[in-house]
Structures are given as C-alpha cells and as structure tokens.
Figure 1 (cartoon, helix red, strand yellow):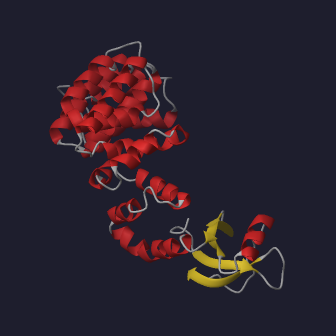
Figure 2 (cartoon, helix red, strand yellow):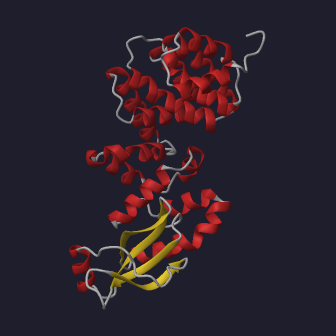
Length: 311
C-alpha cells in the first residue's frame, strides 16, 4: 500500500472538524488542498488523544479512477521509522528486489508482533532463491518455537524453508521425518513446504520417492498432487539444470496419473522453455475438451503447438 499509493501522509484529527483527519506531514506525493475524505473512527480518535506524539499513516490511491484514502496503521515509535525507510527504499527496491527481502528479513521474529508479521508476509512472498540466502536470519530456537505454535500454522511455510538452510543434523532429521509423516498419513497441511525442504536436503532421492509415492499412486488426492507439484515447481525454477531435468521426467508420470494436472505442469514447462510434453498435452486437451475452462484450454493448445515432429 505504501509503495503503490500516490500519496502518503501522517495525520491527526482535524482541529476544525471532529472525526476527520488533517495531514500534519506529507511523506509522499502531493495531497492537494482538499480535505481528507476519510472518517476518523472512535477507537483511533481515542488512541490519538492519549498519545499526542503519534499519528495515523494514511495512503491515497486511485480506485476506479477516484482517489481513495485508507488508514494503514498508527505511527508509533517503531512503525513510523519503518514507514519512512520503506518509502526511502522504494527506488532501490525497483532496481534490486532482493534488497526488499533482505531489509524485511532483519525484522523476522521482531518483539513487536506487528513488525514481525509484516516481515513474515514480505519475506514469505520472496522467490525461493532469495529465501535460500537467509540461513541464520533466525536462530534454531526461534524457528522451532514458531513451528511448535499451531496458532500460526498457516504461516509455517517460511520457517520450514528457513530451517532447510540449517547445517544441524537434527534439523535435517526433523524435516525428513515431517515430510515422511505427511506422505504416510496423506496430509496436506504445509505439504508443499515440507516437500520443498526435503528436496533441498536430499534432492534426487526425494524426487524419486515423490514419483513413486505420489505420481504413480491413484489413491493420492488432487490436493496432495497440487501441493507436491508446488514443491517441484520451486526447485525446477531455482535448482540445478539436472534437477529440473529430473522434475520434467517426473511430470510425465504425473500427466499419466492425472491429466487434470496439465495446466500446472504446462505453466512450468512454458516458464522453463521445455517442449517435451507438447504432443501429450495436445492429446489431453483433445481427449477431454470439457475438462478445462476456455482460457486454460487456449493456454494448453498454445503449448501443444510447440510439439516436436518426432514427439
């Protein structure tokens, strides 16, 4: 919101109009002379009255062609400097997106829960190649404590991937045990993350197991196949050419087991410029013309036209 908005201001209650905001400092853009069209609710008003040194961070972005104001947080002694740093770093991050990941990684596990959650969301959206560089950003104790807290289980993925960068044998065993447990009990909670971490540690061996246990097993659920494919996609994109070759081979078994996975497989093959399965994808579309929506069918057909004559 801060980076995409055209205007960012610090604001407090307008002394001339109760329950309305008045900008006290402009951090980005030009708000103009018009009043801020945003209601100051009672809880924020009380908070600002108790803390006269704090202000609300307001952003204005064009919505449906019309400027729209939004309160994105209270500028307290910890949040306000972060807001300023984000805005100051915007130009650098456009040139070097990895810098954004590095910046927020320093706030992982922050004692301020809001900053810690923001860092978690920011780093979690980063490419796996960048997450790989963050080994040591958190201590083993911090990672294990977070993974033991099931209130945050939906956010465990990043911490699982960070744990995969550990050099500790106990961490490696913990990851492999967790992956094998998910495999045995057919669970899908953070399956993609556990599989990604397992491949990080044991590479080809885990991909062989995935092909045998998932891509050759009709009892596996569609959800399991989707989650496992996410893990392979990550490593096919960020791993070695040899690893990508092995993953492409495993996709052949997946297409045989579940033609419905053709869209996910095709997205990766297109990104990797691999045409091995163009003819097969063409046959899947021809044999099951009503299985995919129109845009997906067009995408599959476009890939199918790349078939080699000998395929």
